[in-house]
Amino acid sequence: TRRQNAAQPVLTKLEDMAAAEEDAWGERFDWKKSWYPMAVIQDLDPSKPTKLELLGHELVAWKAKDGEWRAFEDRCPHRNVPLSEGRVEADGTLMCSYHGWRFEGDGKISALPQAEEKDLERILSNPRACASVRPTRVQQGVLWVWGECSPDAALESALQEPILPEEASDPALEGRVSFGAWSHRDIPYGWEVAMENVTDPGHVDVAHHNIVSNRYEDPSPIKIDFVRKATNKGGFKFQIKKLQSEEVKEKKGTKGLTSTMDFRPPHAMHIKSGFPDGTSLTLLINFVPTKP
Image (cartoon, rainbow, N blue to C red; front, side, top):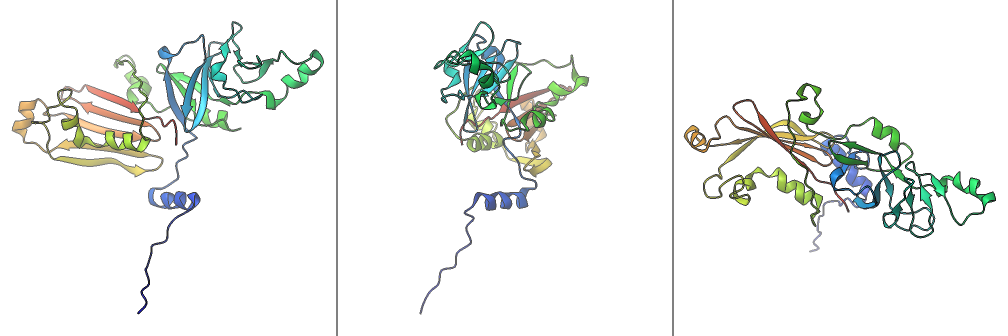
């Protein structure tokens, strides 16, 4: 007898995968149309350009003559030389280190040493001679960069705010909140691994021994109650409840303590601990994917 093997159809095209994702989780999320926290301002040197990387694209951050931080695609439009290897000049322009082309904060070329005077105006007005500009803004001491430099990027970015916890964005809380210092680390593993790790509350008591817990005394069953169900655009939010007796909670000083995890795509995890006296502590972790 002949035997036939039945096989499930395999999605081979990215479009099919995206469509399947959209059916399962709602509206498709566009990674490029979002603000990303790329650098802590106090870590940047305004006297020289800084190389950044986002979603597989190399970028350069620098401070222009108007005092604003800018971000360009890290390539000179002339010969694709990295602008991050250039110089921030005394006149507040960014100079390419190869042929000395200079760029203003809006990406327009302002100097071209090799051009004759009769050709200069024509070249300076040519859009192809401009650097590719990403929308930027500085908020909460962080340089935020938009995920693309499309023709609509300026408008789309203006209609969207960076993702910050309510403690940093609610005017009603002004003067009632104190902020800690930012820290930044480049970690050589995937975005999905990092997100899976921080979303898993069960590892905390064991892996963070003697930092926030005791691995021999604190692990316990956990109940998760969703406050906001998972969707592609909305992320998810859930409350964590440790299934411990009131006697144990009293002994450990955790009675009345609440813990909530709030993920907002594409990068922000807000972990909020609420205390019986009405105060709270929010840990904001941003996972920014540099490469695919």
